[in-house]
Length: 207
Image (cartoon, rainbow, N blue to C red; front, side):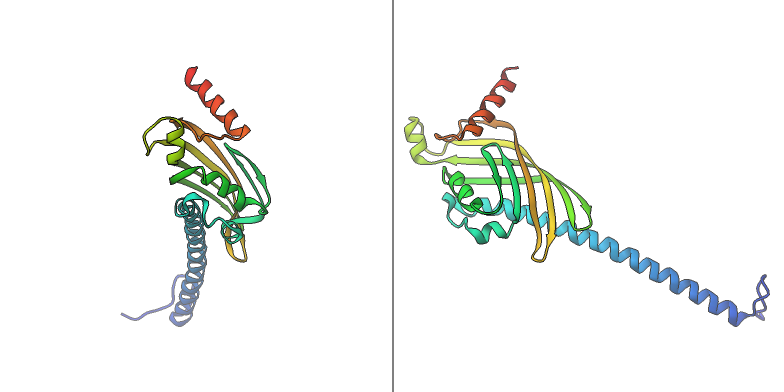
């Protein structure tokens, strides 16, 4: 069969060149779109990893050992704002000491995160996840209460906030940690905000 002009009157060679150009343009567009999708997947994976490493770090540093400035800067920005059931904190200075004091009230803990929601917007992202947090009491706490060792205080809650891309990777700039429910007694010494949180949760149970 002899390949003749197409319906537009273009000879075979010209038509082939046009088709190749169209294919190349489509391929370039496809590659650009694919690169964008890969970038989104990479960002989501890195933010998910940030969440997982943060939660794991709380459990691999029993008694508060290891909470230092290096720990804080590996997860948070310099201007971080954190609101939790036990208090508020602004700025990275003193954050490690605050976390150390909180975790030292327990023998060991386990934090499990799930249902990660990540909303990407360039170099920032909104984050939200659910968490189940188990806190095993110190033997001294149990003894003071006349209870057997191994008792624990469980909290089901949510984390919401913002993460931003930095030169060192993604970091949290804001976290709002809220308790949805609790089971068991808290530590012996509660901060004023922790006392308020426990009273509020108690009223919810009674309503």
